[in-house]
Length: 378
Image (tube, rainbow, N blue to C red; front, side, top):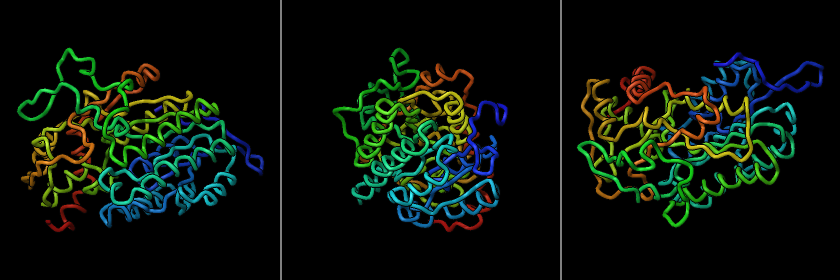
């Protein structure tokens, strides 16, 4: 980590002292809560916005109430929380007005994150993901236009385009030829057109493009981070979102995990929340306008479902319980490995530090008292 306050812009308080504020939407979620801790550790005051909409999306498994309690206890006076929905324009405006130019960075992690759930309530999905992002962007433009704006997008903006890649079926995974241009990972030049996105993918495309446009049209310092599997021990693992943590939870608790399609050989790269936040910090310290970055574990950290289950079984000493449904989920990727080449060219000091076995081991160690002792097998 860089020196705590080196290069961080500050703004004067009314009383004369100076402050720098990190405003985090979705602050009780996995990436949001880690962002709050990370930027508090850099010496910024953290303002969090979260109304636990995940409970509405995913039930008690997905609730972030426990995370918010831990966050407020850990950060104390360094964290101020607002129970506000990002669809609430008036509520957001009051928060942005309160802190104004003291806001040095906006980390926008709030959203509806499941392409399965989006089809149930398309209005809600679009209003949260697209409308909510516009609300946060416009308040940034009006009240803190010099702030770095970090948007948690998704690789689902590419729709099912990756499924048209020439893949080979191996014993435990699908893989791409070594001489293919994407052999090192999918780059940001992949088209988002003429493919199936899912309702969720469409709302995230709208948000992604709007973030870019606020960078180009208004000159804001914006970046879209198109994440794949972003995970870690603070994940509120639910079946419809957070596959790697939920996979480990199922193995630990004796739950049955449903595998959808591709013989369980679909490949995902995974990036630990720590590595996500060091990427965000790098952009914050040297921001650019209208940038787009794929964000994932790349060739360093990836696994198929079959491979991830084997790792989880080895860590837990328990056999995974699975059922197989031959039909893949709509818009699901058969093979996704991110290329981090563009981001690493812009920020060469950044590096990935967690591979998949290390991620799963940390999730196990963090949750063994909760998911083994208290979960009931299903």
